[in-house]
Length: 257
Length: 331
Image 1 (cartoon, helix red, strand yellow):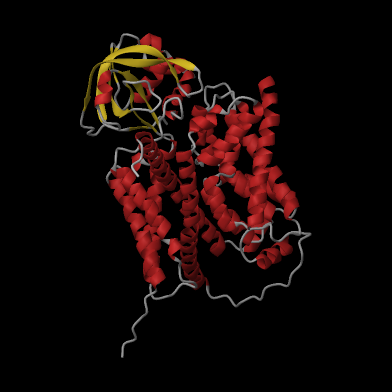
Image 2 (cartoon, helix red, strand yellow):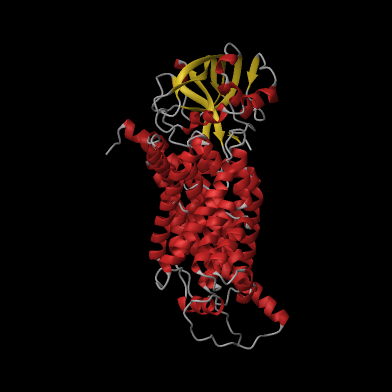
């Protein structure tokens, strides 16, 4: 009579969770969704982890009939499943913004402009004179953003075209929104929204987090960046047009380094 | 009950922050946790206890210094160093040496140093050198304090079989209590030993990863929840006088729970580079201890050591920021 080998439930659960982790990472990489969560420089680490998870799953399958010293509790697996579920929701939706984004409260968004208060000469030298029509594209977004916040007055009167998420903050004045993209240093936990403020009744006709294209003329205004009561001169768009557009291949995330 | 528009908007914003923060922190830390548990398992299976004891001097204070240097060459962040430090302790190194490594590795590893240099380049302040210098000095002070506090107090230690630690420690480091030697077993051949050790390594790594990840995820969830509830603006508003600025730096580092390889960029955007109190406190404390690491450490160290470590880290870094900043401002 053939002896039936007993299968360890812990080994099955371990194999399953390692396989899920490995395939989830592959899916994120394949669909280009990883850059929504972490900076591309982290990709080799994460892909390496995906391969290691696969190896660990394989080892657990090889030992499937050998019980581990202790049975694994459910708490080994539930937290990982919960994290994967939340990450899945996050990457599938455009609605999640990097911060609470309440102007005058905790808007890291515009606070990032503090960064641009240094290295002005280097930023200016890297670009040369400002073009008559300033078009924010993926490659020059960070440089243009710095350039405009370094010296808002110099860009006054220039035409501008920008695509980004429309975000309305609770502390913003009426008819005001920020049109911008997510700046990421390392991962989505440190993201901040950077872009240009638009003031026009048209902004209230659009949904929050909608991907829009704005064009208009640049002007300046005094704005309380950090909600600390200290107003700073920032660029602002006097809108000619504001419309929802298809996001296409345009990146919603900017990686400065 | 139907939520009011303000409450609904607040809930939407808070849940958005929670999901964004949790996703980022999870994918930023999981590879390093896996790497840490794998390195820890490799040390367990392949590095004999005596080899480690040969690397680390018998003098406990010199051993701490070697741990600080070792921390500077291991390219992993704080999540990976926790299981690694516990393994060093299990291999019989003194607790103070393991703590020195735990504190120094995330602060002094090449990724942290380079990212700090890049983030503060052009500001005119050598922030990366200050972070490295003060961080290593704080690590040394904390390790010595742990050494003094834990002497003859076995409850102030890492989690694991303490008799084994003490036996290994006694064999190598003078002054530790002597215990009877363990019985030795006959060893199999080289090939069989290697295959068995590979299997043992992956088995250890699998178990340790699953065991540790739940604590890390609990810590990340608490950090994400705290960020959803506490607006960064509320923290920033307390900037001002030195004590408040230092407290702001410490609180931000603890709550934000950012990875040490990227926190310099956030520090640059949160604080003005010449707010030495806040910047130093933020950059030095963050890699040592934060919300997510407190949860992670709770799996590896006994509660009394955890309390002592968190208190020491906050006190030492806070004091250092308060003392060092006026000197830097004056220079």
